[in-house]
Length: 341
Length: 203
Image 1: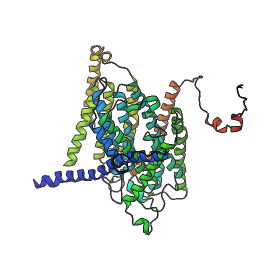
Image 2: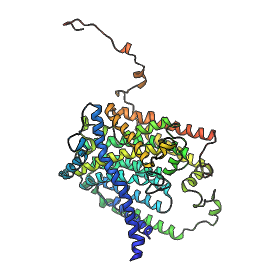
Image 3: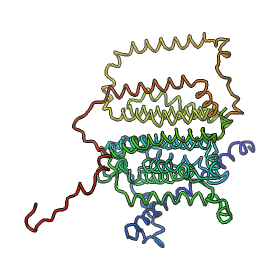
Image 4: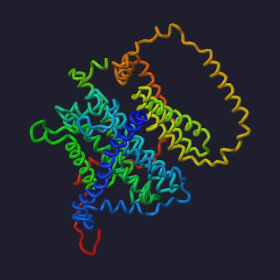
């Protein structure tokens, strides 16, 4: 009995506790990201934003959550029931499962695996299935068109994202995310790789279907895109997944280019603040830019979106891979050259 | 012990979803089960210690190839009755093919022996997994010893891609393209004309 507890139950319970410690703050962050978005856009439009529920409207996200929870879930009669219900769950699940490899501070990571960068890339490339399944299972033309647009868009921008990740990877010499952050101790990668950082950030906008690339949800043409037929909790799961994905993509940008949990300068007032706080601050700054972009830019037309992805970003990021590796080899700065044999 | 349990989970889900790919009537469901099978095969790779291959399997097959599959299958308008037609006509020949393949696999697996000189023919020694990480080991092998073969594989894929484009591309004369350079070259002085219009006259 003791053996069973020590070998099976306790490790299982311990890992569940660790997962909860990561997931609960993320869900809270998602809830308050929606609040922040409404407040920031409100300020930019010279409106007040939510200000009725609770002080400064702080309880608004909870009220919205309760509303979605209590509403009736409607499944369209011609929908493909199983796929229709699995799609939002998949989206939500994928948005959370990627956090397993994100290092929040030195050693503060659930699974410090060797191929963390590839794992993140793999999980984010799966995100398209939730959208495709939702669009197909709804059996509605708006949902289907939205899903097709979204899938084409996500696949296109993943290519340039992959090449940007490769150029960072060449500078680090490891696929481990902790190693990626540690490699930026002297200089954040945003300085030597600034063009790549910009390409990556814009690609994350497209990858998360955010403005100005939110064509899958273009409300003027497609009602609401792939999630038209969803209501109540099934819709809420899409919504939560989408916002969790935004935070995840900002975390990824932070780790790749902004030095993760490292302080900007390794001197007294800065390095006294714990790493996770820096990490959260950097993510928040990027999220603010996400919202800022939404409030300022008009939507791209679909052919312009594809042109940007395939004819501008892809050649640019491919060239960057060649230039970065060329520079590193020419100046004999290739990291981990010995390990590669 | 936990590892064994996880192995059985991945293996069972993989095999069951593989069977479901073939037996499902709805082609979209088949593709979804195919994706599940890929994903679980990735899990098996991780358990075998080949995490780089596992991630590659998910990125390439699940993230790219299966998406295109899904695209095509969703667009198809296949009804179940249409698929059922001619089932009994094709049954004998299908069974014949299955029997031949099964026999060949059986014969090969019984009689198969590794050539004794095979180990000596390896171009590079297998590195010790404790010393070299499998990503680095794979990279060192592909880009040094097998660089030409690797390039040749890339060229073959390129030819296939160009072939597909050549076969399906048709030039449309009526489509309007945006020429970004032309747009950027425009000047406010040439594009906008200011006219003083007298009230009630029009231009």
